[in-house]
Image (cartoon, rainbow, N blue to C red):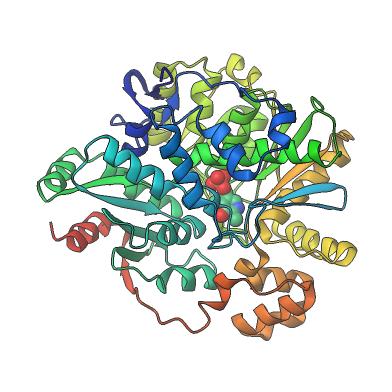
Length: 495
Ligand SMILES: *Cc1c(COP(=O)(O)O)cnc(C)c1O
């Protein structure tokens, strides 16, 4: 019970795990972080014998400390079930010398399902524990994948409703179709005329609006967040790195204690931060390779120690990484500042007023575990094609960004450490970009024609998530300007 959470901007603002999950963001705008990163208390040998669900319990129990064993196990059981199309939940395949950890076997075929399948259960359990009577309104900004995964997770979950904002012109056709066909009486999907950062800033502003919170409370509502700023998103993501390591051992690929590298295609910095937490829990991770696309604000940050979002926002074929404000980086900044909340608050203040901050040389020295890299559009496409030609394996564009960065890293360093690449989406989610990368002849085909072609080419059955949207009716058509997001929420909730 002694693990508590505090805000990255003020150590005095503390919360239990369940309160942090309920609240999403700290009231001062900071993110909740554990006051100490717990150590794994099971050996790798023991973990290697466990199922995904069992590993999940061993990791999550160390963070979600105010849930009973029964409560947490119940959440895990309900999340990681037949919604996943493989009993392994997160299978790993070895291709062209690296291990691809396929995190896309859930209901919406992106890695967001790994956390968003369990978040609704964590949240409703946390609500009961804290005697919350209000309806919990999940407010989410999405660059494409979070939105659908959150909608699928929260649809018709009692005591909750969900409103998702996405950049109208910034997601793939399949991503948009997945969202606007979402069923569930408690779901709302809104396109905005701005980009993802506008959507995320709009959502954050609503979370920080005390006057709005009061009016919501009077009407019987309160906000919570399904974005990766919620600690209930981060913790389930730590699990699959521990699981991946234990599988490498189990399959005889490495021995207990041998190092592994991880490469993570990064946008909001949630997924790679989870790997960093896993390392800090004692998992033998050597390098954490942070892969960006042309929006390479993180690459530049790791190179120079300057985070500068003042640059052109580039729409790429890996839209879930088209982000210039990586929210979860704040948790890393806090840690490399020696858990100094004041320092962290200053830097975040600089980011919000000037769009740029510099870390100190001491802080930069604490980043030695990280390597930044990026892949441009042409290289991403070439990487997809080369993998297909060599192995017959089709990757999605985000995974290809990571694979491209990995190849560049190995060419430069000669590092032969066994490497796990987080494979974050099914190629079926980004069919057009993937097929175009393989052959330009596909350009003239329709979206669902391409789906069938991809199935022929890869020998992988069309996932259910795609089959079900082929003919599904459009149920959501609200579009608003980014300045009108709050007005739209008020209208939806009847405030
Ligand atoms: C969200 C997403 C990412 C980026 O993950 P972060 O945790 O935001 O860094 C990468 N790839 C895909 C397919 C995603 O959906």
